[in-house]
Amino acid sequence: MLIRRAEWRLALVAGLGNGLAELSGLPFGYYVPLAVLAMGTGSYGGSLGLGRQRILGSVLGSLLVVVASRGLAGVPMPLGLAITLAALRLIGGALGLRVGYKVGGVIVVMGWLVHGTQLDGWIGLRLGWTCFGVILTLLSLRLFWPSQAVEHAFAERAALLAEVGQLYGGLADRLDRTATAATTPAATASSAGVVGLTLETIRALQKRQNELRRQVPSLEEEFGNQASRHPAARLIQALDRAGTRLLQTAAELVRRPPPPGEHPLLQQLHGAEADLLHLLAERLDLWQQSLRTNHTTLPRPPDGPLTLPTSWRNLERDLHNPARAHQAIREAEGLWLGLQASGRDAHQRSSR
View (tube, one colour):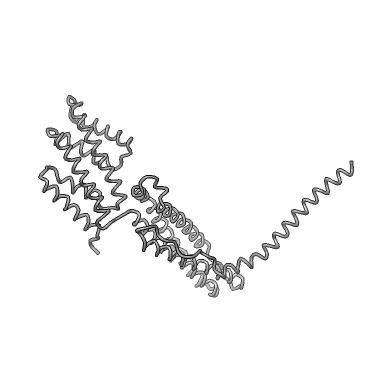
């Protein structure tokens, strides 16, 4: 699709804002589509943050150019302009401005150089049109083909989890092949090639997850006050933590390929591990389906608890027998040491 709905929405809202500004008959109406184009390409949360930055930068730049143009009237223009821009930088840094510097700097420069004779009227109209453009953009993102950061976050994480599930399915298939195939140089070389390719895939998935984490500020803008307590925010944090652990585990499994062998116990171990990885891959597929299909409310978790496969439980049962023997020896030796200490104390008392 050459033109996505975001581009259609941006074009329509920018045209609507420009048309309303022209119908009003007031000058400088072109600041409305400029504001729409500057902040209308992202999600609602990201645009809300950009809108705040734009309005705050506009207000700060307007105040500074008004004060500086009158207070520094006797100072040479280049020096006065430099002092005003430096003040914008210092005050903006204290207020946490990021992209708002650009808007404030443009207002300072244009107000000083272009609109010096009509500064009061130009500043009022510019602020008014900018605020109108910000409000129009936010309304379009909320009501017209809604584009929210929460919806985008769930969709992106669903896509990531789908690929992680495919990765676990591939690791399980590799174990299945190892449990059944004979040990040959060709099979070993093929396994090494799969390992190298999978490691590259894991690094790419980890990079994507880090990019998703950098979008969290947009989510916090949508959640408002106490964003960390919002259920959707907590779910996204849990998904990020789970994704990190899943990818780390997958990397460890890739770096530790299953040793080939035909011993029945080794084949049982490989089969149980493959069943567990298949189960995890299927569960991740349920996760991504739930995250994709429900954005109006908090996505539903998969039905039923996650239980271990029967082969893995049988393996734990078989391994539990040596563990019981280990525990019996530990308990006996602990009692042995205690009796030895008691006997030593009794012998010392009797010798006195």
